[in-house]
Length: 402
Length: 107
Image (spheres, each protein chain N blue to C red):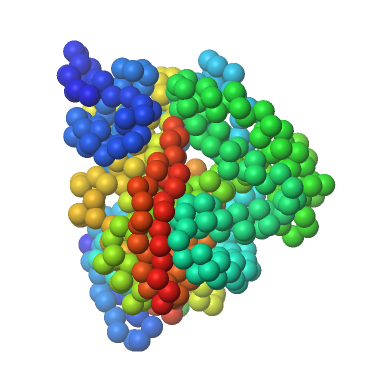
């Protein structure tokens, strides 16, 4: 990986492939290279602009009129290529269309709704700790980071019990598909047919239990907020982005707390820090590493001229560790003031399920901190490779009861 | 620059000098004030920068948008007629001296 000054434009061209396996295995040296090369860089491998500093990532996220989403938030430009699936009505949309659909999901996942489901989510977290205390030695990914959201989120959505094994593989396809046409993306899409069929079926009104998030979305059709054709696609958004992301978020938090025992003991001393410990893990590990935007016009960004119709890759994870914005960015500190991190994005497309994620993270970490004295890593953690998501495939641990 | 006074639930107060164009939430977090979480970073999505605005100031604030109104129904501490989200109050020179009370809890 080398940096070289480009003739004329002033934008450094980098020979960095952010979707290469070596990059994904350890992105931090490359993140630093990207950040320090300049406020805007150009990646020759995929012919895209890149921003890795906090200020520019935040600026791009907050100017959706210039940096649009409707041409896709992956490398593929929907104006030039046919999307692999019908575009999302919220993620891959711009105002004013986005404003209407966004309002529906905001309402379904509002703070008021979170208050109603909080006790249920907390009870499920306690039940998970019961099971873990029986096991003592387990895989913190499969048995905790996956098992907990799987025990609560599909039910909260109102999904049928059958076929839920498609959920994580489907999400994995969705997030791989934002990447370039590399092996990760190609193989994911090749294997996606059964997962897509399952998801399309579950999004239908008759397959969603009354009272769940899915049924609440369909109820918005009766209110006239969306059409009957739009509702299933909005349910699809929750199926795409509501599970694997929280799996990686909780996995990140447990991995952090297991690696940094001083932070674990602070959490043990004061379990009310659980919500902050989760939020800091989202900043520190950034389960969603990157997203693209497409320029709608020629624009100057921090001195760099970018033409119309260019893809801009935002390195959320690099922004979350930009020393220009964060003190000791590479330290996991559960009492850090994390407000403003871009782990959930920022601006009009900021994660609509962020309250669900925080609730799951908070109640799970609270339950762990109250009842477990020690979490020790007992084997080599294995990474799960995805073009967009960062997380582990397995994390062998042993726990000591409190 | 306009100054704002934050009154904590225990009655203690902090007077904060604000910077141009920032919100009440940003002024609070920039000064490391306890009692404002602002988990969503000022995007009007989380309701954790809830404040009770001193009654004498209420009418002078920018009007509330629909999304703020809806979010206030979900605040952790009780919603009152004086409730606002501090990320939605941009500080202007005429708000010099603004007084807001912090709720007991944000989550």
